[in-house]
Image 1 (spheres, rainbow, N blue to C red):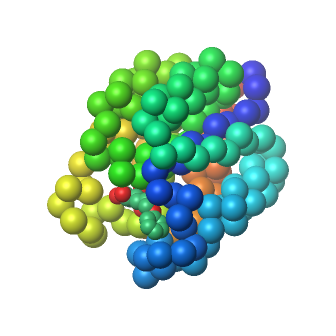
Image 2 (cartoon, protein in one colour):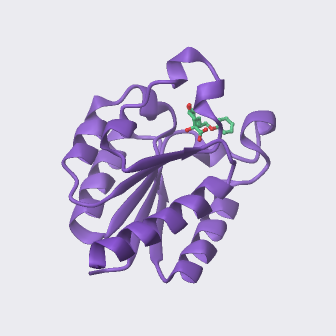
Image 3 (cartoon, rainbow, N blue to C red):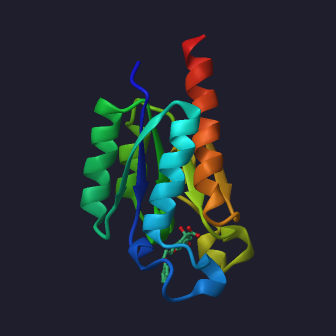
Length: 149
Ligand code: CA2
């Protein structure tokens, strides 16, 4: 089985490190890419880290991950709370899915408490800032190890 894990990021996460640092911190998406790459190296995984502001691109990438990768980590950003299309793509996916959010979505506005992605996810990690990506990679490596057994 391949050791490739897709890490897919949704809309506006390209703005990280600029506005709203009180919610999302000062880490940029490029910093997170580096953190995730280092964590994957330590776990013996390789990652393909992507971001798009477009729902259709995210759906295409989920389908690509299902064909080509061993697992998928996703921060759907705003689409988490709205997108049936992303949920359907994830439900059709053959690989394990872990959902991440930088902020604790349950401590925020009511509309952020519902996630379409969670229906298709093995687990959800939120509220620990950029560390959620490291935690998700660790969780994914354990999942993939147990799948091999
Ligand atoms: O906490 C997260 O990771 C979120 O997925 C981030 C989304 C939000 O809609 C979700 O409810 C929770 C928002 C991403 C927008 O990121 C920005 C970063 C800097 C400045 C403005 C937006």
